[in-house]
Image (cartoon, rainbow over all chains, first blue to last red; front, side, top):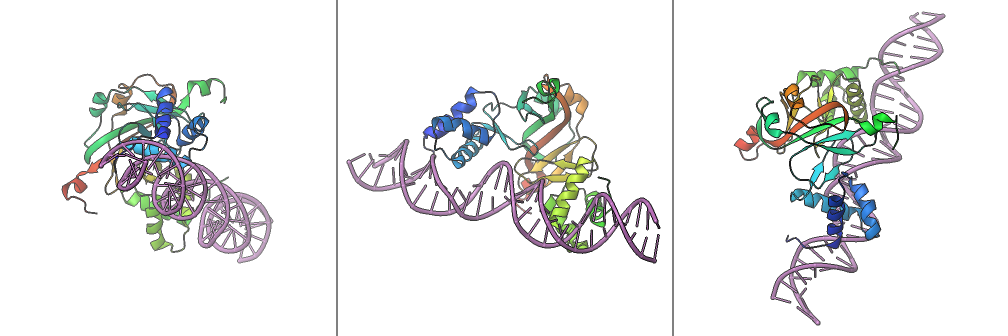
Length: 129
Length: 129
DNA sequence: AAAATAATGATAATTATTATTGTTTTTAAT
DNA sequence: ATTAAAAACAATAATAATTATCATTATTTT
């Protein structure tokens, strides 16, 4: 199945790349709808999934939150705020991490590190946003 | 809401504790059904959720796999095999990990580390199990 | 420009999980 | 031991997130 260009996919990718928020499929959907009012939610899911398969973007599965998407493909960690449900990037030295774990039961293709907590904005003012 | 004893919950806990496989709700359901043939799947979910809220067990959210549950509550990491979908424990020195990341955007309550890959059993024989 | 094929939009279906409701167990109090 | 109150149950409906289907449209190839 040879890949073809599509304006919708381009719009999705453009939106992701333009913001360093880490939106969910729903957020992408509502944003891209400004430009393509009758884009389908399925198209958003289809393209996000496809692009993450192709390594063009990254899918962040964090706990019970719906998946978030990240245009940064280099290895790094994340922080999910349990109040505002925003995801933040966390810089991580994976060489050091590799030195801090015991033997693995196989070969790992990737290592996801996610911190769960409350971001300082939410901690600061009780519960805004 | 004062917690009361229930045989079903005990059976669920007993099954979890007895095996160091990290079953999903479904697996727990089918096992506990041997003992309580008309236990409801909702009961399994309800109790797994409740126990993990209470810190009695841990819920492991791993990618697109359904949640797995772990009776070991001490901090440790996991490895998900993409072929057999089993979850393995990984020992991790969290002090070292703490020293290998950049600043966090808030206060973290927990840090989940998950490796995704292929376990040696599955790598060994092509695709058994 | 026509034919071939992949992507879309609309929507149905699926999967995992949570909520609801009426009934049964368990605990605590008589 | 009875009984009343609260929590847990089984069954099932409901929800949320995601994926599949399929007829139509857009992109690419010839």
